[in-house]
Length: 428
Image 1 (cartoon, rainbow, N blue to C red):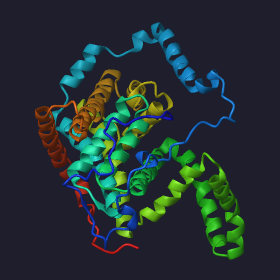
Image 2 (image 1 turned 120 degrees about the vertical axis):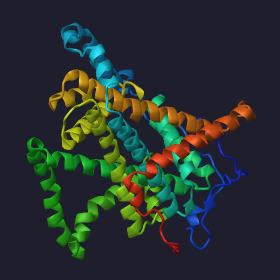
Image 3 (image 1 turned 90 degrees about the vertical axis):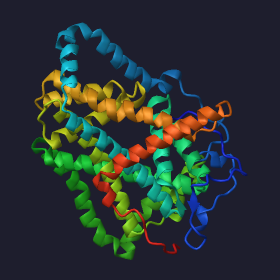
Image 4 (image 1 turned 135 degrees about the horizontal axis):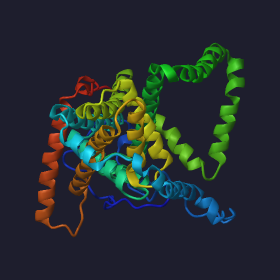
């Protein structure tokens, strides 16, 4: 993720006009930052690229640079070495196939709808942020960028970095300025991460066994907030309490490597100024992004006859996400996520073969199908000189039809009730 990457898309040129379906706001409604500025080398990335290596910094030993990778592969080799010990405990492939083949069609339909709703919520969240910054983007294009970015992130080496740069460039091609594109990516990440933490905390509070530790961990910031809020109303106390933050901010601005990132983070507030209605819509969409994904796993479990509580499924989901982040040996958390999900479902009382079947069905839709749609969306957005006109037209037609279908799936989900259009008002 920290490597220098090149997004698989033609860099936008200064003279390239935005697509015809992009409609920037009028000058009276758009902030100055929403205008399209000429693209510089720095504008090709959502974060400023360093001009070169610091010669004064001593190179780290290779074993320190590769420590994380070495630990991961050591765990994998250890698991393979212990395979003869737990081979008899693995589920029977025939039983897994039988459970998946007899899955309930109604619940499988719910899996597809929930996954489409999750992806649709995130696409609408990014589109709403662009709208707050003064740029109108058609829903189909927002869906295509979301699916394509997800495919890049979950299938390529250094996928998250490639996805960020690709999404940034697609926003730029759509008419967003470099500050606006950067702000949308940063704000979207912060909002979705906050929603993820909130849903995870609620899942812990709902579980009787985890409620005590969760309340203890939650009590500390609550007590600090109760003590600090009254103190912050007094100028002297506010100056004393915020002094460490001000010193840290000055240090960050003075640091040669951190300063460019700190400046971009500080610029988010100047570019995006959501109203209360905007905040409500963004929070709702971020929560629905995660809730729909959890509901997809719940529907997959019910499809094969596993009776597990929604809270148990939520804890299973978050445990799998943690495992995928801790052992990112393969793109998309392949292997780690499936194993963690199956083990968690078994811990909640499911038999091993149905649990493996439920995880397989869920990942078939939420990972493999979404990746396939994402690469097709990438092909429709990608303008490659070696692609023939007939092939490009066919890809565009197929991609447009598929995006319309995914949008239709998303429209039947409850988040369509979220207010998505703010009134035309002049923003400062």
